[in-house]
Length: 460
Image 1 (spheres, rainbow, N blue to C red):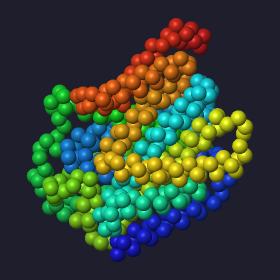
Image 2 (image 1 turned 30 degrees about the horizontal axis):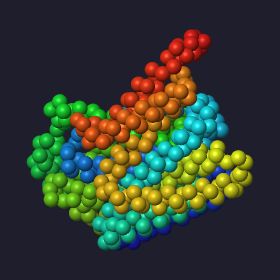
Image 3 (image 1 turned 30 degrees about the vertical axis):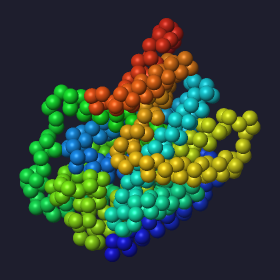
Image 4 (image 1 turned 90 degrees about the vertical axis):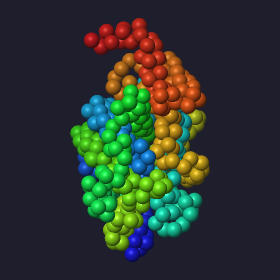
């Protein structure tokens, strides 16, 4: 029964994606789907796309290994959503014709910044896509009985097909359907898992105290704080996220949708993390990567298994298609367009974006087969963005004084700091992206201070 439900779900997603994408005729449609969506759609597509494999299967894995501290760390992402809704989203109306990060960067920093953000956007999207594809392999392996590599090829192939054809239109409409499935499926999993383990008291008794409490050791607390910051910074204003701030029909809808997504993520991360704790109570010898799928398999009746497996797959697919689309737009609009000496026709740009989607899909498969931990892939991929593009992009949107000099010096400091810190094996458990982002901010805002004071005086 569960196999039938899974295939029916996959068929619906594929049909919905192809149906929604049938009207795409230009790169703008491919990137922002006509900018016609309201708050509830933005809420659904943000939640489905960014609460992906790393924040579901990966969260259950890490809680299984280290405890509920990982849930608290992930709430850094939730805080970021709220902060973006409060400070960034209201200012996106300043970029009515933008379809990518490069369209925001170029007016402030020049053509070189557009290309720079495009390169790092493609790298980031390929890495995060790899995390989703890797999670997909584990899910298909456990529930369909196929090899992890085969599962990766199967799941990724479906995503590539409809995302390539329909772009953002396909992504948004499949996200809505996938969001409904995951919002039902994951709470069901936690409920049935607790019941199967003998109740909440039984779960508490069967898990170590250290897994159910926050660390008190100063070094461990420092590591937790650093991980919180890493998730706060990691996906902030990444290309597919910026695209979702550009698809709303007005600023009010964008703000509301973003805030709802941030609030929703708080209990959702608690649910997926606690599923990892239930898995630990049921089978301490389990492969941690399979914590969430294992609870589904062991705890739920066959019919509900099919629904929840579809929910797990939907979480992964909804993130994968978004980053496929984000990579294609970053390459086509932010790298290729400024490098060409002549303008391409809208049809040709669209075809190139679709071709890039295929290429990034292949790269993501290679990435996923190289690194085994889903959440580790996310943290590795984050190093391509926060230490380089995030600070100058946020500064420009927020109206701070910006210059090419600030961009170059800040990004150089961020890259060097992140690389050196990672080469030292991340002392004190602090990831290099945190150090890189702090270095970028420090050098960015201390460069050209005299010019910045003059500009601020003129504004006053």
